[in-house]
Length: 139
Image 1 (spheres, rainbow, N blue to C red):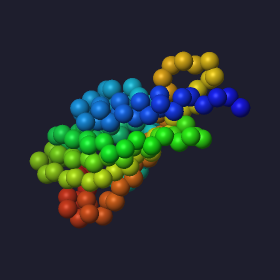
Image 2: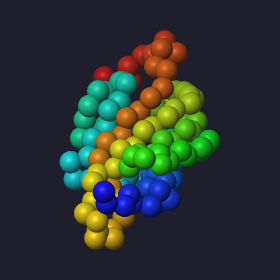
Image 3: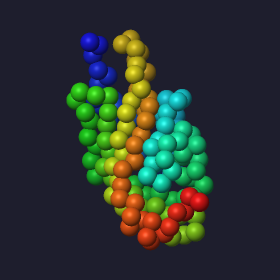
């Protein structure tokens, strides 16, 4: 069994993701994903990371991220980020909700010293209040 990538480096990647999301830096976000990286979203389903974040940027004016905690698995290459998302949509409406994103990292060869890349991000939040308030703003 090969040793796992240090937990702190995966958590650092997730912290970089949260910072880039807060800054609206889609280019930096996509660089954190493996080339085949994907996002699973309650609103949009399964999409390639670049396509998902381009769609998010198209529908957003601003995002304010307040990190609450980052949780790293001790047995899997997985990290979860729990944060508050204050999302300003293109039409100026603002919604705020708590969210948990689960990041699964791409496998790396044992001798690979590059930073780990995100293979899949699963977004988890309660969509019912958001849909009632603003409808489907991705449409």
